[in-house]
Amino acid sequence: MSMIIGYTLALFINSLIVLGLGVFMFSRKGYRGGPTIGFLMLALTIWAAAGSLEMFTTGFYTKILLSKISYIGIVSVGPLFLLFALRYSQKDKLLEPPFQLIYWLLPVFSLVMVWTNEQHELAWPAFHKVPYGDWLLLIYDHGPVVYLIAGYSYLFLTAGVVILLTRAYKLPEIYRRQTLLFAISMIIPLIGNFLYIFKLVPLQGYDFAPFFFTISFLVIFLSVTRFKFMDVLPIARDTLFRSLNDSIVLVDAKNRIIDFNESIEKFLGQLPVIGLPLVNYFEDWENYLPEIESTQSLKTEIVHTQGNQKKWWLMNVQSIKNKSGILSGYIIVFQDINDQKRNEEKIKGSENKLRELIAVKDTFFNILAHDLRNPFHAILGFSEMLHNDYESLSEVERKQYISNIFQSAGNTYKLITNLLDWSRLQTGRMEFQPEPIRLEEIIREEMEIAEGTAKNKRIHFDLNIDAGLVVLADLNMLQSIIRNILSNAIKFSYPGGGVQIQAKLASSKKILISISDKGVGMSADQVGFLFRLDRKMTNKGTENEEGTGIGLILTKEFVDRNNGNIWLDSNPGFGSTVYFTLPVAN
Image 1 (tube, rainbow, N blue to C red):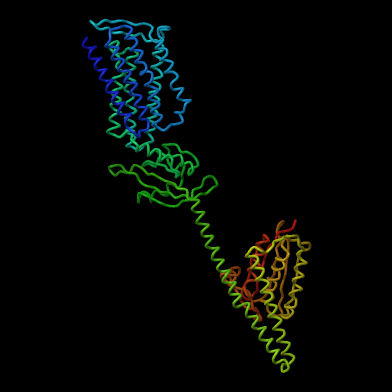
Image 2 (cartoon, rainbow, N blue to C red; image 1 turned 30 degrees about the vertical axis):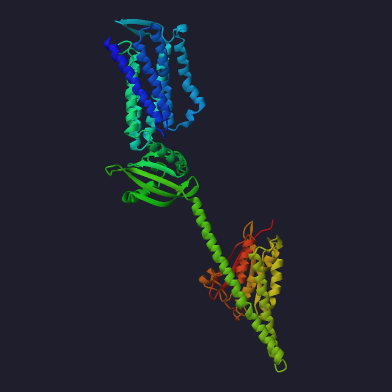
């Protein structure tokens, strides 16, 4: 009899302890899964309190009623623990309503079967009354429903333990110990309940499972108060770690992957497998290890290839050491800096464009200030002498002055034409109207225009053009291209020399045109600066002909606009050859 009183009193005290723990858990704010633990402890309180009263009372039917009440707690313990494990491990998708229905389907069914046992006797087929003085000990024969409850409870508790152990494996060491302690503590009640269900305890009728659960919850209480289990820190760490856009991976001292966030897929192109070496996914990792091991950290920009795509990343590596200062591993953060790199390239491009615009401005004003004014000095000077001294000048002098005026006016007209074309091209006001053009006709027309200048220097033309060549180009631009190149060839040819013009089919889509002279030629440095506005080239011709340097710059822009290429070969004293291509007209 003293055994029954002691058991009843201990069980009742056990229920009060668990109730106190449950109230404590409900009072704690900010714990993920805290309310679920509170309900779990409330279920155990019902189990223990009803069991205590059932043992204390002597009425047969009262005992059965209290036993049925205790099963409200018994059927709830397994699913509540599983729900806590899922919530704490942040497996929120498995907490949605369809899954909740699955978790509670068997518990609700089992509870209904327990409360209707008199109609089917599937929970308790028989009861055995064992009198102990004034006390009555009731021993239950367990039916299929009781074993069903035991089965799914073991399943839910085991699943919850596995989920917590899996999460513990992915957490840092401090949080891993807390989670492991909690998960292992829940194995203890499985042992006590197993002994009771299968009647392996020497005292029949005594259910010691609530005591085992109390031990577990005392461990939980210790974890919460002493080791800060379920504190906001691991939860916040996990949430922050998982939600960061940067790709993060943790490796141990042997460079094996021990944790990562989902964003690592952006860097590796796939989610890695924990336990495998990082080098399996990131081959260049070994190249950085010597510097990392010597400095314990590294911050550098890298180019990583995924498939055929190269991307820029900022890799930040920091060593992790334990309290003894021994290296535990590294945390590696990969930050996508492709947009930053593209912006830097845009800024560089803008800077280059700005420099080009400044060079354009400087060139333009230089032409206005000098090149355009100088020809007018010659025109005004010779005109003034003709006006004032016409009668006193000889016929030879008059013709010479008129020739100088004509030449200066021609140069001025050519300069103004180029300036206007260049200005319209820079401001986007020049129309571009490509059309099929017979190349030989245009070249011959420009040769006729340049013939007068060529005769003055006794320069002959040598034309070699394949028959039937038709280019796709803008007529005005093509005329300007040939006119400027031909003019330069005459300008830099020695008197009595020749200019060779050739055109042939270079490919099925391109026609190659070349204009060569045997004049003064240029050095490699001069050729390199020829098409640059910021390096103005204004060499005088073989008879001191003036130039602005803008002609070839305009020519290059016209060639580019017509989907062609232009280049020049030259050697000092051996002349120059200008090559350019234009598309074939279909």
